[in-house]
Amino acid sequence: MLGCLVNADCERVLMNHLDHVIDSLAREQVWRYNPTSEPAAEPTALAAVALAAHGRQGAAERARVWLAQLQNADGSVGLRAADPTPGWCTALAVLAWKTCEPSADCEDYSRPVRQAVDWMLSIAGETSAPQEEAGHDTTLAGWPWVAETHSWVEPTAQGLLALKAVGQGDHPRAREAARLLEDRLLESGGCNYGNTIVLGQQLLPHVQPTGWTLVTLADEGTTTPKVMRSLDYLERELGRTTSAASLAYGLMGLAAFDHWPNDADGWLTAAASGALRRGASHEMALLALAGLKRKHPFPTGDRQVAPSIS
Image 1 (cartoon, rainbow, N blue to C red):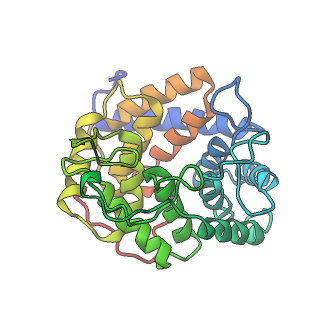
Image 2 (image 1 turned 60 degrees about the horizontal axis):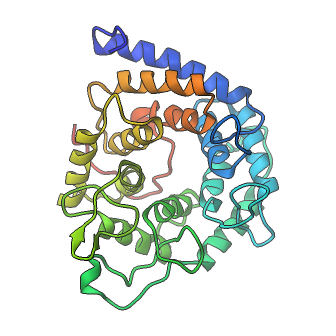
């Protein structure tokens, strides 16, 4: 594992690589999915959160300003300058703006945050009457990727995190979103992107939505069998060959429940080396967040933190 003989050696190597990742992120003027793509809201918001969490408020402020310039008149934040819709990145922008510390030299984002939250509360995923064949509760509303469509796991998780970040974790929409996320966990552990059963067959879990869901539910005080089996799923699924983004999401999900696999430092180090070679700021932002381990920066509001399982 990259020459590490003991966990302490691996942690030192990881921190060295994370320093390079943060330095690379901080040098960027705009943030993209890859070096040849257009600047985009998702990697920019994640970079702002990661940079602020690692003490790089100056660079984080450039990202926050860019997101504010991208905000639409209705409060939503589109994908990129040329694509003002759909607005699923709005919740991520709220998380980025809320990283501005009161003592930091940054803009006043209270108005962009208020407009963004108002827009978020104005939309919801489509619901329908209970459907036994669906396998999940179709009456619950979270957030969709695109307006006037089904509620999906990741935008719902991001929406709930954004409401917690602005002190509205007990808002009825937030509580319904938490119920939806728990409902969408598969009986065998993990979750798919939005459904649980299709044509009588349980869908397969995926790391990214599972990681987002566990990060979001960690302060809900729930250790239901489905949550515990979801942690087991991530533990089994993650490894040296897991893609950088999925690895980061999965490790954040585990760390939110105070659990860190023994080999995770080595996996992160290898992934960080690859992301640096590719110049992939989106991946670097996610890996920098995962490298924070149990000190993840996502809001937990005033709700009960889930107990350790390590």
